[in-house]
Length: 111
Length: 119
Image (cartoon, rainbow over all chains, first blue to last red):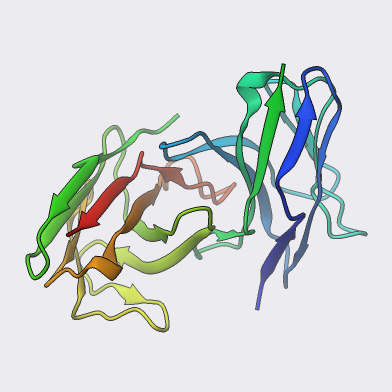
């Protein structure tokens, strides 16, 4: 079945460092891809999305590009802030089904 | 974007009692809602898919008699944890699909979650 694999955390960075969180997927068909963020004690918030190959999703300085040839959707940010500390989930969905999540990657940014 | 609410945001109950969690789509009609469970520092696990006016579809390993799901209207789905035990303590999150905007993108909108603690 479909699945999402993302890098194990935690990822610990200093403020203004470059961030990459790797995400690869296995799916039949052409899924939509998402990154969600979960701040401590809160629910999930959509960070960005891409619906077809070569689409780039972006929001709040975060970017991810839907790469069909490598089945990847890596999350990047050029300069992280302390407020970016959270758990990040990569996810995919096919038409008519529920989201399938990766295990989540905890990001901790220190000043 | 579309807004999904959950109530209560947290609940503490005694072992053996039942707890009902509500999930509402506030500004759209959701024919399909999903219930997830999240253990500390772990990912979300899909429990069931709730379709308005029909029985929920449960994922393998989820006890349908323990986790009762009712999707009685296009804006409300409820999850009732029956005869709760400490091992049912978890973070329960619902999501809804807005057919008006998300069919193209298959996007789901998430509620803020309900933290259940069973003593």
